[in-house]
Each structure stands twice: as C-alpha cells, then as structure tokens.
Image 1 (cartoon, rainbow, N blue to C red):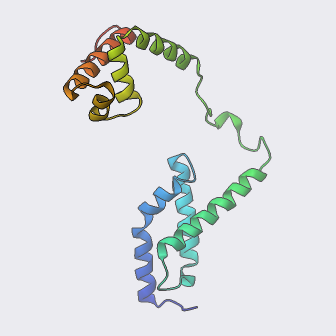
Image 2: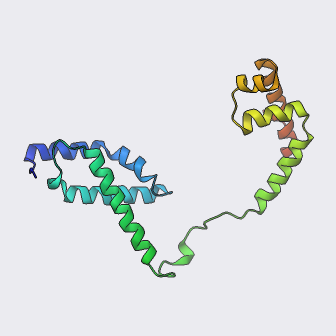
Image 3: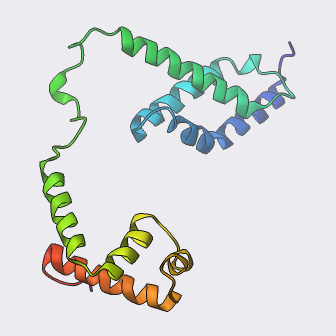
Length: 170
C-alpha cells in the first residue's frame, strides 16, 4: 500500500470535492428524500476523508467513494432495522401516504369526463398524454395527419378541462 504525499493528498481531496454532485445523485438511488441523501453524502465524505490515506493512487476514486457510500447505507439500514418500534417520536414522522379519498373522486370524475369525449378525441388524448406517444406515432396509429392529431388533442384537452373544471384551458 502506497501512502500519499501531502501534494497528492491535496489533489485527491480536490477530486473528492469535484465528485460531490455524483455522490448526491448516487445517494438518491438509496433514499427517497433529499435530506436523507445529503446525510448519506456527508457520512460518506466523513468516512472517506478519515481513510483518505488508505486510497490507492491509480485506482478509481469515484468507485472507491461509491463503495464507501454503499457500505455506509447498508450499515445505517441495519441499524434502523434493529431499532425498537416507538423509539422515534411517532408524532413527528411524516405521513407515509396521503389520504386517497380525493384521488378516488378525481379518478371517477376523470373517467366520466373521458367517457364523454368523442372517440377520436379520447383516443388521441390517451395515446399522446396517457401513453406518451409522439404526434407522429399517434398519427400512424390513427391513420391521419400530424396536424389532425394536434388539432384533436387541443380540442380534447379543452373539452376535458371544461368537463373537469367548468372552463377550457387558456
């Protein structure tokens, strides 16, 4: 194992700083909230800087940091699993899922509004807005020109907005 000189150590530390955006992006693959991701990045940086003298020059620094992050996450995960229920103040915890009653009503209203559209407008709206097809792909499916697709989609959106909110889109 080689030890880093002071100059090389400073260079590696600068490279670590340059990799912080990549670490933040990688942290988001482990956790869902930004603040948990920032905590994981901070824990990774603490561990990395504490062990920077063990970094082998010539190896991939990014991989080394990602491995540290992965191990830090696994350690934190194991600790959370071992914690007894009720240790955290439950009143401060975020609600894991919003109430679905409003969504059920909106879903029913949306289905009714879609059913009231003409078949041509409904099909284009579902193809483009629902399935994410391009205008070209939708025109191929419907057997009409791209301009017709755009026109039908615009009318369908206006009709849908009128059905759902009582006024067309502006």
